[in-house]
Length: 196
Image 1 (tube, helix red, strand yellow):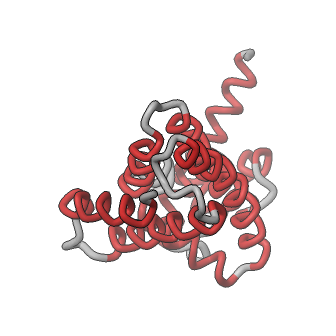
Image 2: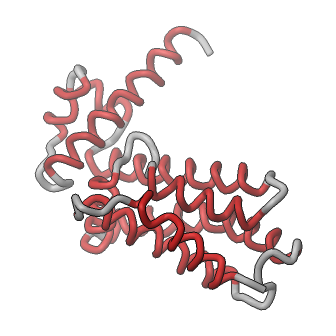
């Protein structure tokens, strides 16, 4: 990668980080392109070199987060204990949503998806791609005898990701909730739900 490409990649990443911070603080509708550019320390024109508009930037953040989730699932599929890999993947997603997205921004993403059809389509498409990798992990766990092989793995992936989404929202909205304190209950419930 030459210096110009490296600089372009660096600027794009700065814009994503600035946008994530702005969207988490002000919400999608409350954050302008000017706010994001100022926070990133670039001109609005430079922002438009990387992203067509605010919606495109928001969609890019969603896709990047889902790609990180798919990568975590691929890593878990390389473990020798697939069920533990599933639980580790889930707990990692709850603790650390995916840089630069934090718990507050994830709840904002879900809210925007409920209101904006274009954003929802991006979310559903990239979510499906991420869950396909997770479904492969579930199948490996079933083939190893670690989870119930009769389960509908597509449905299981939806339910488990809904559990992740709910605990991310709980973390964002309840200052008294500390996921680590509930980890044993979480692991027990997931193992019971999936047991052969």
